Length: 638
Image 1 (cartoon, rainbow, N blue to C red):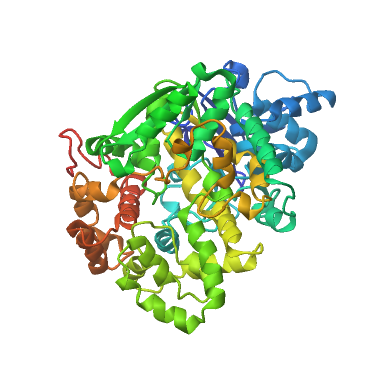
Image 2: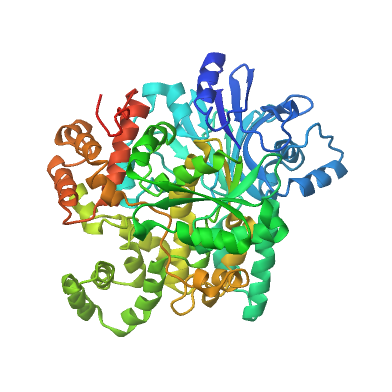
C-alpha cells in the first residue's frame, strides 16, 4: 500500500526534482517505509511505499521495464498476481522481485491497457509509456484506491493518490470549486468524478485514462458495474445452490487477502459483515487471528460486547478500545491533516480509531466494507421494497395528502418515510432519502436557499437503470456512487493515515459480480436484510449473535457537538466565518447550529459536513498551522 504522484510538463519544460519530492512526501503517511523518484526531461514520477510483499529493495518504485522506456508507480494489491505472473513467465518475461507491482508493469508491457481488466484487486496505477509518449492512469473496479488528476492544456498533467500533492505542486492555480462545494452538501460527497478543486477530477472506478501530447485526458471503462448488472441474467438455482456459491466465493476472496509478508488482522465491529470475514479467517487457524474493536460509552452506539462474544465463540483474539469524547479531540489533528478532502461521514472517527488500534499490532487488516450495498444491508432498502406496491395501489393525490400529515407520526424514522411517500414514483422516493441520517432534505434546502436537486438526480439514475425494481436499482446506485465516493474514501484515508492496509473480501470482483446477479430474495427476504450473509453466518455463530438489529459503525457525534466539540462548532461555523467563505447564508447556517445545540433538531451529519469543510479550507488551502490547541483536553482556538 502506497502513495503515488506524477507530473508531465506538456510544454516540454524539465521537471524540478524538488517539486516532485514535495508532492511525494505529502504522502509519507501512506508509505512510511521507503520512497522512490524517477525523472526524465518533462516527466517525473514519485512513490511512497508501505511494504507488504517482498520487503526488499527489489520492490522499490518507480519500477522500470528492461529498456527503461516504461516506468510505473502502483498503489494497492493485485490478489491474482501469482496466476498472472505464471502466465507472463510463459510468455518469456523475467521477474526480479516477488511483488505484485512488477506483475502490473510486465502485464502492461504484454497486454497494454487490456491488462487492467485482468487484475482482481484494489489499485491505482500511473504508467509513463515512453515508447508511445503517453501517460496511463488506472483505478480498480470498486474504487477502493483513490486517484486524482489535474490537467491544464499545453501546460501540465498532474496525478496523485490524494489532493494534497496536487495543491503542493500547483498552489493557488487550483482554486476551490464552489459548485462542487454545494454538491458536497447536497450529496454528502463530490459526485460525478469531480473534486473540491477546479480542474481536478477523480478517475472513475473501473476506468483507465490516456493522455497524449496535444490531447486532453480520455477516460475509458474496462469494467462498468451498471452495465454488468443490466445485461447479466439473474442466477437460477435453489437457496442451497446460492448459499454454496456464496460460501466458496467468499472463502476464495478471504484467502486471497491473507497473503502478506507482515502481521495481519481484522476489524470486528460486532455486525454481520466483519463477523463473517473473521469467521472465514478463523476456519484456517483461529488462534492466530487478531481482531480489533472500538466501543463507545453511550450504549446505543456500542457493539463491543457483541464483538467480544463473537470473538470468543470463534476462538480468535480480540482487542477492544473505548472511544470517548476527549479521544475524539485527540484524533482531530490527524483527521484534519490526513483527510485532504472534506468527508461528510462522521463514522470516520471510529474508523480512524480502530485503524490506529490495529496498527499498534498489525500492518494489514481485513474489513467488511461493501456488503451493505451489494447484499442489501440498509434499513431504507426495506422501506423501498414496501413503498413500490403502495405507490402502485394508492393514487398520487391521496399519497400527497398522507405525506402532508407526516408531522403527526411520533417516530422520527417513520415520519420521514411517510413524508417521502408523496413522491411521484419509487425512484424519487429513494432519492429523497438522501445521504444524511440526522438531517432532513429540508435542512439542506434551508441551508442552500433552494430546492435540493440531489434527489432528482438520484432518481434519474434509478429510472435509467431500473433492473426490474427500484430496490435493486437503489443498491446499484449506492454501489457505484455512495460506496466509492464516501464509504471507501473514508476507509482508505483512515487506514492510510496510520500506515495500515485495509482489505475487504466483499469488494473482490468475483463477489461483486455474484452479488449483482443474485435474486433479490437472496439479499432481502421478509424483514431480513443481507439474507444470504445471515444464512451463512449461522453456520458459525449462534442465532442470538446473528439475528439482532443493525447498529452501524458510527459515533455519538450529535452528543459530542453539543458538548466536547461545542466550542469548536461555534467558532468554526460562526457568522463571521460563514460570511468570510461566502458559500452559505450565515443566518440560515446559524439557525441550524442553534437548533442542534438546543436539542430541538438533530443536524449532526450536516453540521459535521460543514465543520470538516471549514477545517479542510483552513489547513489544506490556507495553511492554518495549529488549528486547535488540544493541550488542555478541550478545543481552543490559537
